[in-house]
Image 1 (cartoon, rainbow, N blue to C red):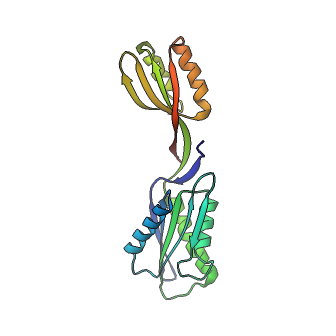
Image 2 (cartoon, helix red, strand yellow):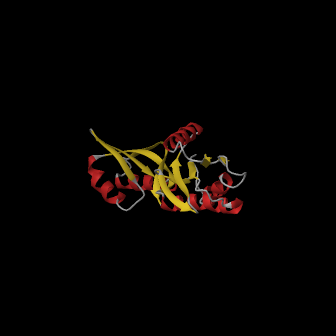
Image 3 (cartoon, rainbow, N blue to C red):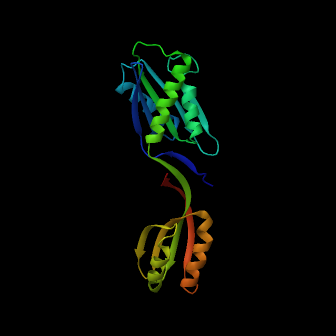
Length: 210
């Protein structure tokens, strides 16, 4: 069974200058460690002359794998504060990278932690986030005479119609919340006098924007 989770639906970037140092923060959706490595490599190539590339990521749903890196900054001043930002926002399948161009003024351990965490937090606020919610994928077969009733019923419900196929009957593929599946099945049975055929095909995530 799929587990709901929150994650960005697309990458987002912000930048901040703190005491002449430039902090460029990226939030990137990822699903595997290969995704993480590819994204890190791309950022390092884009900002190849930067002083530091610090990151934190979280992967998975039921069991979450986490990792962070200070990218050459003093231990505990960058990666771990960034990881706390991801944890605090309950995000997973996400990579946060903060690239720093050193401006010549040292910030101290506390100042670095605030700078890295604050930069990433600003990007999280700006990022397009969604709650990835498990839905059942269903296949419904009904007679032509019930199509109008079906279309009227689904308006305003959680049902998301994916496809309609017309032959001697009408076959409709749709997504719905798992807890609503039995209720919908009863309605379709009643509206067709027992002629509806409904089958669960599988499960998939639907991103619902926050």
